[in-house]
Length: 336
Image (cartoon, rainbow, N blue to C red):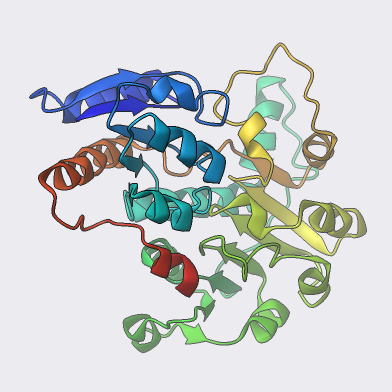
């Protein structure tokens, strides 16, 4: 297939070239993100390949359809940036990569947890300046703490297994509890008791109408004072204004974000010589107990290679005319 690959970085090109070493597909790599101003670049291609912050709304889909595009291949698991019903109406097939490396994301969440607790990032910078004081670096034993895990799909399940090794009590919330995790000692509860009891809360759920801003002022108000919140899933799960208020009052003791609800204008770009215009993001950066990474959790060799291989495999299935195994359908949106 002729594929227009949007939001391309060097690592994207390298991984896709490896997966396409036989030359089965003709790939045009585009640095630009996909939106209503760049959709015209799909001219002459049968498929577009999009990433997490690309815009694939009704307007963009109509533009793609008008230019002969019949498939949108997402090289990510989430599809909240796609108007799936509009794609279906236009006859455009949408496919995704449902699980490229749950270990990568779960391990990153664990790393953020340990870094926030023991302040490795601050200690590293101190030592480089020959400051060997321990003042301000006091942490806590993770052993014996209660960890709340919201979402126990593939990533949440791995995260549960990792923190279980620390000797933690694990509370979990999921619309569809995992029986094996339950048998292993994970306690499934409703959100309210999870919020009340957890010392650490890690988000591993998709972004839907139901989960949008699930971490808001009311939720934070029901949590333990000084709670640690980790989000490696989707930025809009967290109401940023509410968590800033929680950080200011001490209701939130630690915040780890690998995603941000307005990240599309920031993440994946080098803005080191520019003034950041997002005042909310800049305010987050002023807190010493906030750790932000730029949607990095998925970024391992294994994950990016798997993303490329599964994406091109999805396109091969579309090309042969069968029902793709990783199809995104309107029913999936309705049930989420």
